[in-house]
Image (cartoon, rainbow, N blue to C red; front, side, top):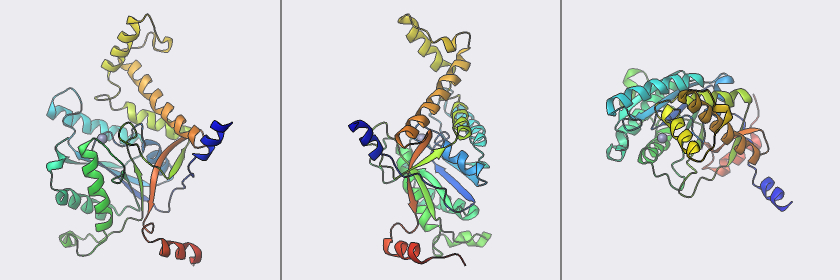
Length: 298
Ligand SMILES: [Zn+2]
């Protein structure tokens, strides 16, 4: 009973999609659109609701995979394009900064690129890593999270990168952000909302994740799982007769389904992802309260 009460108390409010029609996902890596800590389901939910979205992969992902630096870059870009297409994303930008060496990249350069892309696509909503999360050991995650949070605000200022205006761009203010963070090490992440997902959104998330064969649904993963089980005289009947590639896809899709169900159960629905949702008026609570109390439709 006490456990049930505690579980209920921990449930987060369910977030509604904010008003808008365009979003951008600003990330360091090819695969950050769909992970155990979020995004794929929310991206599918947005595109199913008619939003248009673009994905930014800031690094070249040269170290992710076993094919050598240049090949990893190309394979991971192709897989990123295929995986984000499953989620309904319109296109992928690849900025090519060196994977895991982004600390050395000038923050202002990266931020300028993100400001340029924000001014080009004019997103109402940005998705990305939470720069205020406790700790993420991945240097690219920290770097791009910080650059994104700065770009979201500075893209709206007319004195920032005025050279962009010479090609017809204008300042653009982003109104909303959904931020995620790793929960598998450090002190985890404090989310302020849950996003409910449908069956079809979870299926797209499973497919997007398993499309990354170079790093996730790789035959070698299933081969090593099977070898471990074999040593202990165990087997998984569902995988009998399946190739290592097929088995790897089944395992990875199960994983995305499991984490979506787990977040759903924690928050009183079947499937969910959790986020820190940010509204442009959050830092001025007096003004936000005034608007909430007084604004009406014309
Ligand atoms: Zn990443």
